[in-house]
Image (tube, rainbow, N blue to C red; front, side):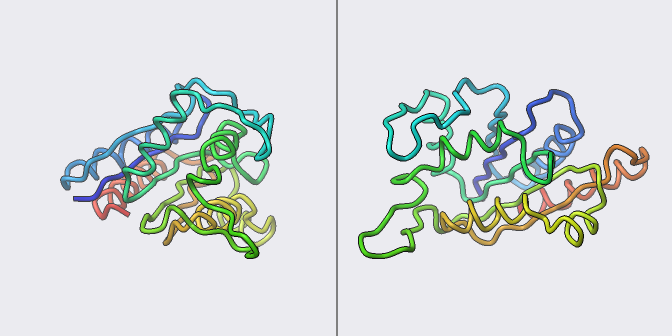
Length: 192
């Protein structure tokens, strides 16, 4: 059975992203998948990558655990809001501090392309937003989706990466929110 790591990157408690995450997890577990969770707002770590790749900033225990869970998982599912056309600082800081050289990728001598150390894994992004998905894609250019899919996950070898844009949430009806919950249940049952 598939091993799934669900990563909640929303810094605020009790949001619609939490409801979507719960629906996905419950449906995936009903199919026999093993699901583990990382709620980033509950982890203790400095989101500031203060020394960059040239420094020696030690990983906090929660980030060491996160790396172990990423290695364990076959499939990663990220739930987070679209803020300012990309991701919240909490998720960006988590990526900066966790997806490090030697863990997620490896620089190669005399080669501009890195070795992708997380090959064999797949991912899904579930991104809540207050604008319609078509507007985000056509008029804004979907920079957050591109950054996560191509700039982070593909760069580390994670493919395929599927994206579910959920919005506009702020103006949505209860009926529309129920349809998004059902969508997450269907995706969870398919373990994608």
